Length: 195
Figure 1 (cartoon, rainbow, N blue to C red):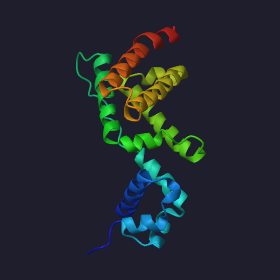
Figure 2: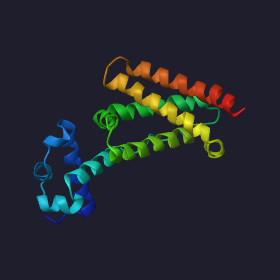
Figure 3: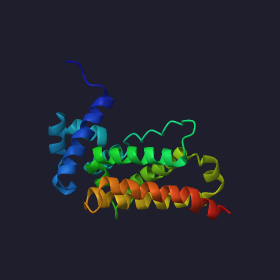
């Protein structure tokens, strides 16, 4: 059997580490255990990631680099609401498929390195919203647009936690809440603020 490509080997280690970190607290998972689960020596694991902390940060960053929901294709006659509805639905499907990843990402407070990784992921979510609704030019000249969308993004995180972690909302309820709020923000609040 040939040697595994270094990128594939690195991803294999990350995949096994993510599984273990999802199942148990960080403190109770060892590099030796991760190496065994990945089928590599501890030395090779350390070669790729150095310390357990570096491996953990890489695992979280990889978890949050899930490909973004595709931007709904522009269709003649499609309204902002149509595009928002399709995008919210795709986002909720992504969260449902990657529930553990998302809930892990929501609980990184108090750790500056983890917060930086999560913050970068949040900025990508705002970029996605801007792309979906075609606000690129406006957001570049009006930073308050990005600020309001970042506020919406925080509300969307809390809403997803109410659905996935606490069970106080159904998926349908989360969808309606996010869609209606984002449409109102786009059609009424942002134009009012920019007047």
